Image 1 (cartoon, one colour):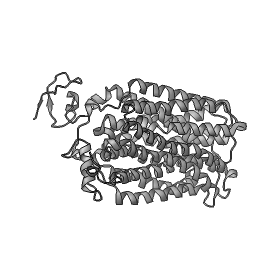
Image 2: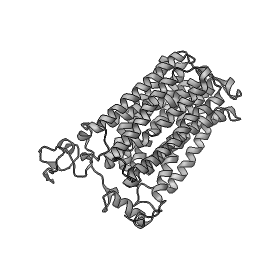
Image 3: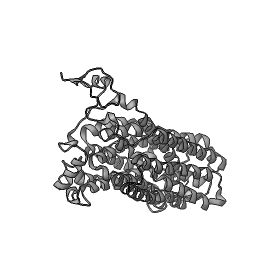
Image 4: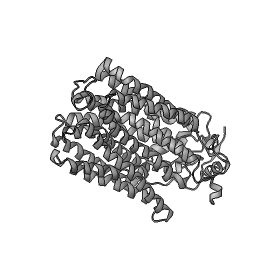
Length: 482
């Protein structure tokens, strides 16, 4: 297809990816800055001492860190239905508005109710932010032609790395400045509010509904989805039975759950590890904590360029590409984590270097496995992301509590060895399952005309299907309309 038929080289589909990138940045910054804020709030000597200090135990701090995920997993599944019903533009606006409001209230709530109030407000914030990634995936599926999917998807998801960098790097500086630790929450509130204005002005559910897009780009997106008569108007019933009996789906679920475990360990526990074992103060702690995520952010684009070149030159199939990148992204960090556990404060520079390498290698997980959801099922990508992200985030809910049980002495290297060793094992076996059973092939149950007998029973006035074998064959079932 010529460039003339694709519209502009940089078009509205790229603007939508930029808006998704910024959405993840501002929400991730608000989500993750709490790991630095908790350190500042409980150790005023290492930050601006003009603000209140709280004497919270390790277990209480773990409750604060994990409370977000208790709310986060609850709304994943409903988010899949909401985004199918109302579209990403309306639903994605909700968590950003709520995060802005709740972040602004946090300092006052903590002053009134201590760690219990902090945990509650984080729980509610998690409820709202659970809507984000099903919306992101659904929006990417609507706007990303297959040849642009790696590029747009990887760029949008690199917002998580950018948000992690900003959360870690800026939070310590803000807490050490005139605003103190409350400023961390005020800045998060402001950035979320600013993004809401951009989204309302520039966002659109799909190409046909955008008032900014030109006809050539709109037609190219529709044509590339193999729905020239209206891909975005389709509302295909969800084949629940087929999804829950799909081996590739379970492989994807396991590999993403492993990533959830590792992410929560590195994102939430890095400041505590550096403060306890490496004995860094809050300012240098925050800056060095940001280095791994800065490496992850930069490496995400290295992986993106490699993927583009590999696919354009036909070096390998898409499945091989995703599995190869995912293997580097999982098994490399697994080895680095084991090494980190053997280092102490006299080897702080080496520990930081290994953590940076760990995070940089792990940056390929977006291309390696997240985008596989859209490859397998573009029609149901939002719902599949809701399921995978919901179940996968049970582990970020549990890992802070597990760390709180294992690490009873924050300065104990041997206790942190257990934490990092467990994470390495999870990384290894999660990717092994993906290598054996994962695939990027579009699944037969994603087709518009695929419907199992049990699925049809769940749809009022739906088609009545002749109960013939419906294995993955070329034959179509007999359908009688009632």
